[in-house]
Image (cartoon, rainbow, N blue to C red; front, side):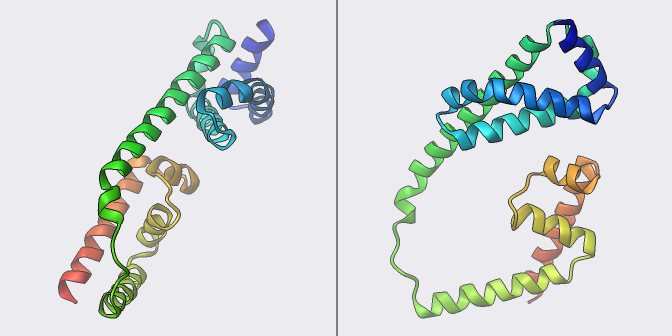
Length: 178
């Protein structure tokens, strides 16, 4: 327990090697627990990555933690429940729209329209300033969320959000004038 507190203090101070040690020791310990909760090894990996990302992003709080193991288990439980809620919401949404998805193959005219629209979209994206274009592509083409983009580009969430809003507005204007 004192070793865990000491490890938490090192991580709180920004010690990357201590964080790596924390990650590897707890990841092995928690993997079976999260797989049991989520019923998916891939989901468990995703949940645990999110847990350790949150721990690193809020590492300054670790010095206040009295029982490190209980703290991590609580975060893992909460993150697992968030994942399951998200999956349930996605499933309900899919069930609602499934009848709308059963459509006939698009006509040649519709296919041409889709291709032309895709070409126009790529043109609009290419006209964006570099930062907007990069953030737009990370969001829309790589399906990354704002916090993930912010971390990867070392920007604030609000900067990423503002750039994404700017990109979408510019693309809409491009289509209105086309």
